[in-house]
Image 1 (cartoon, rainbow, N blue to C red):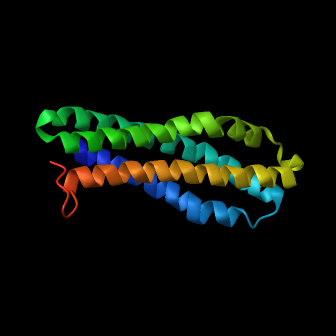
Image 2 (cartoon, helix red, strand yellow):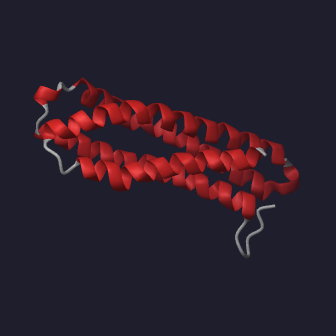
Image 3 (cartoon, rainbow, N blue to C red):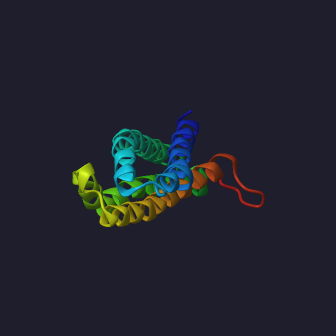
Length: 155
């Protein structure tokens, strides 16, 4: 049950992150600077809590699944642990590379949105792409550990 829950949490994190990366953030990018900022602020406030919770849940469940596999299925165990590492990596990425930028964007008053704000939001989108890639890598590790690949035995 824990492995399936880890896979579901990683899929939810990755799906939401991909949506922001390919749909929401590019759509906001065609707006005027003030409107981009006005849309980003509440979206970020709501999304950050959801994304952080899903990443942490997926990481913990994946690590628990990996530790529970034991030496009997070493390949599967390593896949679960690697997936958990990728999911934790998404959290570390956010704090190490995005935290300061997030704060600068959040602190920008709407009436002071400018080309600099647009540049910060563009940078945020690129960094979000890295976080998304980490989540997808974790998801793929979990999927391979759970169902395997032809010619590859994860168990």
